[in-house]
Length: 487
Image (cartoon, rainbow, N blue to C red; front, side, top):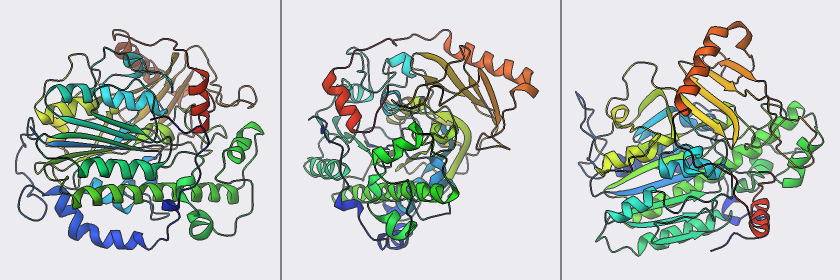
């Protein structure tokens, strides 16, 4: 299937009243948590383990649902402390039914590189999809190819990342931003399964991606009525904020937040519909569920930038991540150590008891799933920036942005030169300054050097598949229709 060449239009599915929010909130404790956290055992959540839980191979022969959403910031979900609006009751309940990770880091604030990392366990430089529009190498092992070889039925129903050289899928469809179509096709496929083989089902929603049309009219009618300003759920209006360097007022920013929150709420509704449909057809039994976002969104937090592709900050790199469905997982547990999306595939392999590819940059999270309260700062977590030598590392409550060639990313055609400036070195104490407003590099030179060394040690010996790939004119137009206005 091909991406639609026109910009997607608001869907009736997203123009919903808020009546479903309290209804889902009431239903979740009584129905969903039982179905998801304890579906293979007695009714109710499993009893907390008194000692280490043996999880390796505990999902052998189980189904896997990989549910990913586009452009959803962790800090705009109730599960991560957001209280301004009820954006995510269903996602919150899903995360609460298993183990959630408080500090998961995306490898790049861009969909194709980030999701390719989820499928391979490699950083973008390792799998080669360093930009949107790039394809996975034909010989690269991926999660669907490995599971298909071990007897799984595999299917992907995506609203983004359509033409990335996908292989290993028995069924594949991509709707180009039309989440309602993605939902319907995924449920129709699942309902046709005969149950003879376990399945891997990947569903990716366009979700809260700009221009935030997934919220329908929720922002205008419920979240922030009466606004009459430059912010609107239209690509042209949002682009002008950056190309014309508009200074947004507090009132404008409130409406921007309302638009984005409405899109997150629309995403939550789509998640609810998928899980409800799968549960009603019996497809959540013996099913490991992995939920995550590919990246977040800046929303004017740094450099007057609204989107995500240029960002190196936590507004776009901090993403939700959770594992649920297995009786051995402690419902409601949280892992505080930093982890990476490169860890997802190795974790799935180990839970299934399958030998995954030898080449991997991520590590299995099974020890943290088994002992989510274990102490210690955890391992460093990293991000890259395409083929440019720009890196970030998060460790022990600190975040370093390392830009040794003093590159200023170019984010948007028509934007003024240098509109997204980065210093060669930026250091933030996330524990005290989670919004990264105060650069501490000048006063912490020793810490800067230590964190630069972490980056050098991590990437100096890794194999690389990065390099320029030519995009066809048609693909560039399709990407632009989805709001990807610059590579």
